[in-house]
Image (cartoon, rainbow, N blue to C red):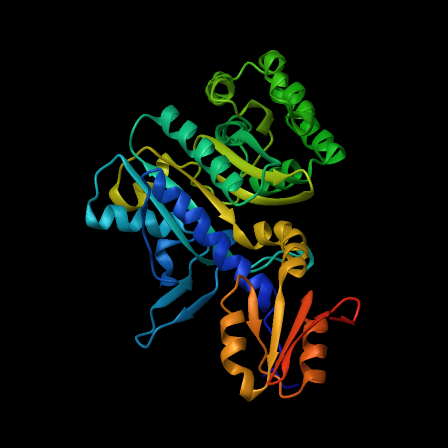
Length: 394
């Protein structure tokens, strides 16, 4: 079989309007981050595998790996946070730092998930400073940036990495059991959790309720009675403090909680986030606190929080509205050589486009195919305007 026209699984081409929207959306979000004091950072698309992996089999099989000319193992970056952590540690940058980025990330998902292995991502990282203030800043800023690109129906789910991690410690789970437990929480499998809780009765009451502990922030008020774990109580306290601060700032209606949330990367240590739109069940935002990440680079913890936005999903949500808008205002200008000056003047108007077709018939077909509303035909003897949809002339 010839592969010269096929694409690897999890990748796809982006054409025309979608590609343009991707560029425009990334620019608008980055421009907004600039106004809030974030400084841009860019890292290589691939680095030594050790930046991304600690040797855990589950992590390594999610990496795109290859070798350089000296036989050293390289990997395409699966996220932006790890490379930024490497840069900050290598250069010795001191906090507080407010950083922003835009670029592609690469993750190997199973074929049946339907997820893209190549994603365009933008986001922010706050390194150093007061942890709670940084978390409030991160969530508020990303909500504002989404509003800046036209997404007003965003819901930010807030969880805490310590809830899952504390249960793993207290239940004495090995690596295989941890992965199974994470899978049950992610899928919110009630039957699976019942079987799991039966094997670990010491936290049975909390485990049985955990898949249901998501939704409005008011559910936090009765969670403490389900467990005696001090670390889980502290995690709930922190979620409440963050929700309270964001509500004071006017973002309360955009918040929900999910106490069973488990992030993909194990370096998260505190509050964690995911974002959704009311018109889609697909997650397009992810992040959280990752104080432990800097231990692999510096040997000690460092306060840090970040949020990444999947621009592919943002563009998908916006695409239909944008296409309808473009169809209503675009004009195609066909011209004869003798009328080129008039045609060029008309093309200076907003969203007026010169046709490169040889004949009027070809220009008319092009206008219909590409969603133009009006066709202007400039000839030596005068100008004709056609409504593309109705085929009327004037």
